[in-house]
Image (cartoon, one colour):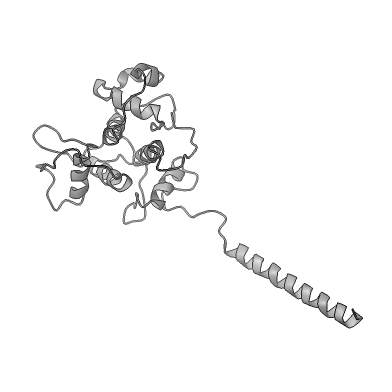
Length: 229
């Protein structure tokens, strides 16, 4: 090979290498180092952020029109009905009924009927649903296990007796809480040992429990968290 040909070949290689380097640099510039939070009030370091984002990706959660999720607000029965309708595809197990306090024009009327017919939620005496009532944490777990037809494994005390406020769990809820806890659907933030069963569940807590229910039914990959009991 002549000196001229060697020089030309080397020049072409250097040009190609420079072009490839520039291209990679341009691509790296446009690749974000971290995904932007879906909601303005759920920063990436928020304790439940990975679960909330996962449900956003599944189009289970949409948030409010102001761009917020309001993770620390109590969840209402109507809001819960909407979330389970979006998250799960369950068979109808009972006929629909008309609740006196849920009109056909109510924003969550369809989801409420689905939650009822799929056995996630029931009404109250007097044929009312109380759509704006906050849901206690124990009630959320009972609702999820009822709709997903999950039963306890072992005695209730052997599964949930480790909660330091075990005696505060209502008798009606112990089967459901045990079934949920056995399947890692119970989230206790900030203290893992306290269930706080009668406190209103926050929207973030419900998001985590719903995602964990998807994991328990084989419909989602696990997400590590120190607050899953």
